[in-house]
Amino acid sequence: MRKRFMQLAAALLAVCLTAPSAGAVTTNRDGEAIIRVGLASSSTHVPTGELEAAHLENNDGYGAGYRFGYYDENRNFVELARTDSSTTKVAVLKTENLYYGYSSELGKNTYSASVSSGILVGCVHIQLPGSYGSYQEAAAAAAGYEGGFVAWINGQYQVRVGAYGTGADARAAQSALGGIGTVVGTSAYGMSVVATGTNRVLFQYDMGENSRLGIQPDVTGAQEAQTWFSGFKYRGGFQYHRRTGGNLTVVNMVELEDYVNGVICYEMGREWPLEALKTQAVCARTYVLKNLNKHSSYGFDICTTSSCQVYHGMGSLKADYGPSQASMKAVDQTAGLVAAYRGNLAEMFYSSSFGGASEDAHNIWGTDTTNTHPYLCGVVDPYEADLDEYNSFSPWTVSYTSAQLAQRLQSYGRGEGSSIDRLELTYSSLGNVIKVVVWWNNGKSSTIKASDIRSCFGLNAIRFTVNGAGTSGPTPTMPSGGGDVYINGAEGGLDGKYTISGTGAVSTVGEKPYVITGTGSVSALEGKENTGSGGFTSQPGQGVVTVSGGSYTFNGSGWGHQVGMSQYGANAMARRGFTFDQIVAFYFPGVQVAHY
Image (cartoon, rainbow, N blue to C red; front, top):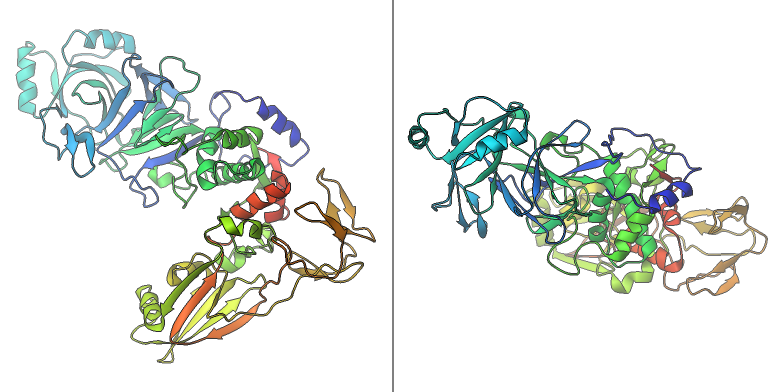
């Protein structure tokens, strides 16, 4: 990892803050945390399933050649063998008979048992007598035989010759060599690395059931190596294993900051304001450190989809896809910074937008927001509306006839053989729907909890009304003096209220407080409603609303689970001049930004 000068600045910035506990994180010999990202797996959260063959290609100008070995318990790469720099394309194959050619199923050239061609990489070999003390010694011996290659078998270097489809073919070749050696195969966990498009084996690895082949790109010492895999280019190395003795699981072994670079430009607009991108970087870094080993049963820490965090490394062939100068600057300027609560990593959740207020995680997932996670309490968001014209999910409308909605709900196991009589919606104090009871004409009912509302009703968020009916909540106003004022939905006078300046200084609210709008205008804090964009507006109140009819129209705003940070809100706050740590503190009250 290139040591970044900005890390020192980040450390100094947070020197007085509580550092979160290390938890399960281990660091390699360079002091870097290595993240295992699942790129191909049988996990439902990884779009690319297990593979018969996994291809790598050096990104031109970003290193050449490959080193083969494994990663130790501290995720250090241990080299066993290497190619020269002229080898720029390799494929890792399970050790079964595979042919190279065009796969109509996959739409590309690859190695597969279903491809018919004359290029066969067989799983039977001739093993020469003895073992060798070093790769150089084994490679010199292998060079004396056509089709010879080095293998690392059960912790020893061996030399093998050929890749034959049958034992008979191997024995015929053995006879031609004067009967030397032994005909062998591999276990169900063996893997071969070949030069792409050929049957030339470069290296073979078989350590049994717990085999983990590691590949570290580049033998040239390039400052930054990038490698193509399945249409995307990645920093770091790769790990392979045959989890159940079948096809290959592929894992990107990437340093923490490189991982964050491969997240924030996909989770947030790559050219969004710097402070918003820095906020996303802190969230992404905290999330992955908090969720290490989330998918350990599949052999990696984190997946590549929104089930974890969207990750596509350094981008694709599209020029405007992947990290930008702005997003990489955001990562550099926050290097090592995380969100902490009481000395521990905070649980960080975020989604596109909330439509005016996030929600208490207790109402969504049953999270304890009284004792353990008070920072996931939900807040009224007066900023997100600044960007409504750019947000395609503010507002949105979904409509059903009564029969269509009944059919949809029944397909999700709610109700059976009856039509809808009415919907009973429960609104939280923040104006989000946290429960829907569907009353059927047969007198029965189905209760749909907050975490299932979006999927059952086909909605983007839980902030909506149905057929225009909603609760009537308080109108947050800004009176002068000691009158009532609403701050994130909490009512009370100005007595005991505090302000936090841009420098972090804390002071009590004075007798004549003023407000500064997003345009920079200054006015006295008076008892009148500000209905300007992003200002204080009426929020839906809590309560129960009943709706019925021959059709149901859902009018709502926002997109996502409604917990934690609004990405559009962070964008809007950054445009107003808020810094990333202030944005974190707004969406996660009580959380501090600290150096990890």
